[in-house]
Image 1 (spheres, rainbow, N blue to C red):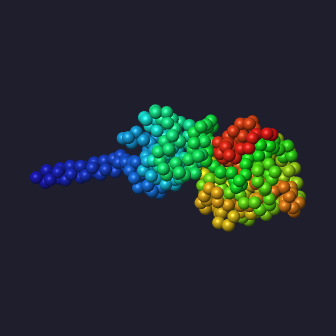
Image 2 (image 1 turned 90 degrees about the vertical axis):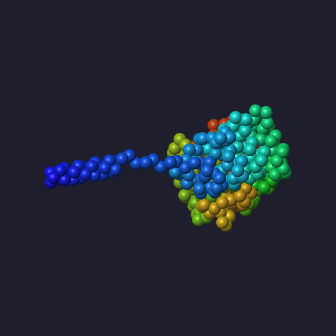
Image 3 (image 1 turned 90 degrees about the horizontal axis):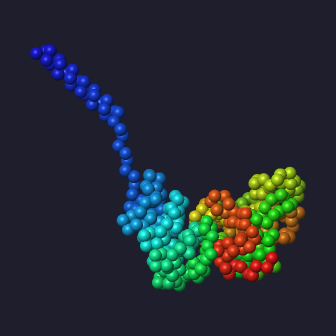
Length: 361
């Protein structure tokens, strides 16, 4: 009897050990991925970002065949939520079975803010649905968009041509100004004095349809978030400026840190779709324009100056001019590798055809 009891105890202990071993070594249960479409129902950018960080699938479609970006537009999402999806890698121009895009949904049943945000992000306004309609055609039936300032730009952009990979719906950074057609004022122009290339648009008085003076306000070309604001900038001495030019002259191309110093006082703004604009040679940065601050299209971000130039190093206010650059998220500036006529056309897409006087360089 004792032997039988002992055997039972041994078997029980062995079974407990096996159970404990299996429990400890069992494969952990996988946590189910969040459903992005469920998260989108909250219309909360924070909740959607958390779902994406938790592994929610971005490149999926719902029962209606819509992408998350399309579904967000259709649900009336604010631009901040659209940007959360775009920043995560949502494709701007995917089309539903009907040919509908996110921009078409915004134009047909959304808001002007959605339309502008998608245009700023680089959405293609020339695409058509299966019935041959562009976003501009669809906007005619949406009073909100049709009566807004976004509609004329949407019509203009839909007429094309459209260069993919670049935005539209920006405004010129100086009120009433046009783009200068002088080759030396456009991005891509050579800068022999420093063995480099110009990377922005220059706005000099006498070439851009309005007077440009020291202190002329400079506006944000689109909504965005400030990523740099040089409030504490100290101007170079003449000796420091000459040393920068000498350093550039010794190289086959202007070193990035030298070029940055030669831009003087700057503000950088990140826009929809990851585009960044840089405003250089500023006399001052506007109050409240600090890193992390949100700015709206047309807000004053600074005033025209000549910082970073020889004239500033000499202690004068001579030759003031806004210098504005447009950069893609991949580190390419607008105009890189292009001929002036191509840049001119692309500037019309980005800033609007009204910003282009007849090309006459």
